[in-house]
Length: 230
Image (cartoon, rainbow, N blue to C red; front, top):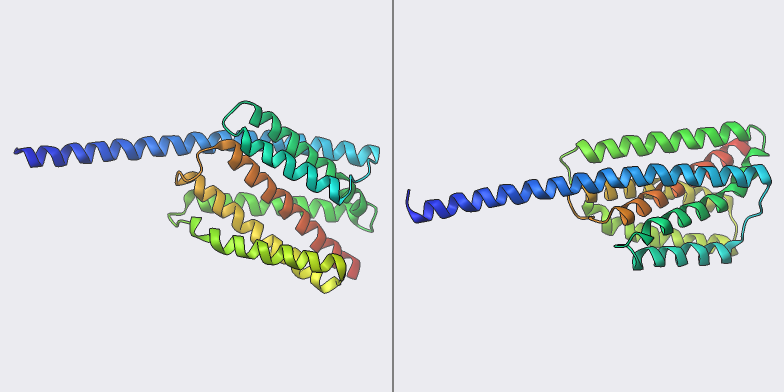
């Protein structure tokens, strides 16, 4: 075996070792993400349940935006420290606090309990189905990033219009669009973890949690709209 052949063999071995290391790293990130996601979903559900049980009022749009983006900024700032985990629980608990009054509103409607349960079940089915697709498919879903970004900008602008000019049809379209966009975000983020694009499990957890939160809220709004039509 000549020197060139040996060098080529060494490169193949090094490349294979690098690929295996990347795969193991992605698996660790995925495992840690799902563990933290499960814990934060449970914590958020407890806070939301307490909010419903004790009738806590909604903090309002301004405080919600300040709390959400303030905690999100802190998580990104301390993403590589242990404080990021605590801040993640603070963020998800705060989001549970904000959704509690919304759930209470739907529970007070006719068939409200059924509407909430259907939204929860639908969210679980969508998340598990899309996660399984991203984990088992050979297709790379990270290319959806640009499309999802543009879609979110359009929805945000439409939501601002809806604040000043409330229209039932616009609310329906926005909720339906959010369901599609959040489904896409679940595919995108899970695929990004699997392929090694996301190496921070805290940031991955926050991204998936926000997608699940918005997916549930959008399904709740859609089911509520159709339920009121009956």
